Image 1 (tube, helix red, strand yellow):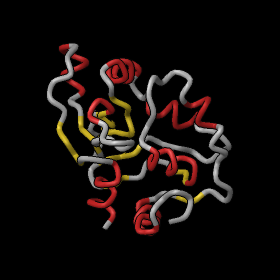
Image 2: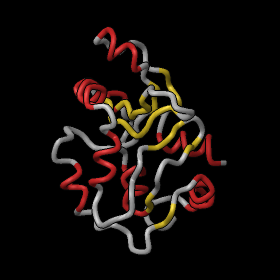
Image 3: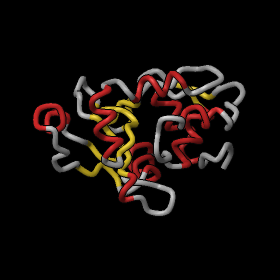
Image 4: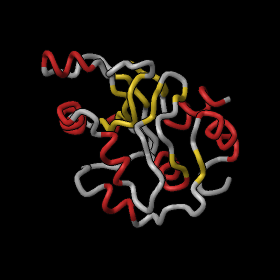
Length: 156
C-alpha cells in the first residue's frame, strides 16, 4: 500500500483515466471541502481524491464526478453538486454523491452513509426522477456493499 490506497487498485485506476498527482494534496484541504458537508466520505475515497486527479472516468457503470488537478478539492466540491436540488436532498437523507451513472444517465451514484460499516459505506444508485419529480428518495439500488468492494469488483 502506498498513499493509503492499496496497490491492487493503482493499475486499474490509471487505465480508467485517473492520473496520479506529482505531489499529493495536503490533507488539510479536506477541511475546506467539508465545510458544508455534515459527514465524511469513506477514507479510501478521500485518499483517492488527495492522491489522484481525473476528468470524468468511468469505473464499472459509474462516471466519477470530476476532480481536477490543483492544490485543493474545490473542483470536486463543485462537480459533486452537479444538480443542487439532488445534492441538497441526498445530503439531508445521508447520501454523498461520488458521480452519476455512465452513458449520459442522470441518476446519481452516492455513498449511503446511514448504512456505513466502520468507515466505509455502500455505493448506491439513486433514481433522480423520484427526487426531482416526486420529492422522495425511492429505493436506491445497491452497486456495492462498500467503496472498497466497488473498486474490487470493477477494477480487477
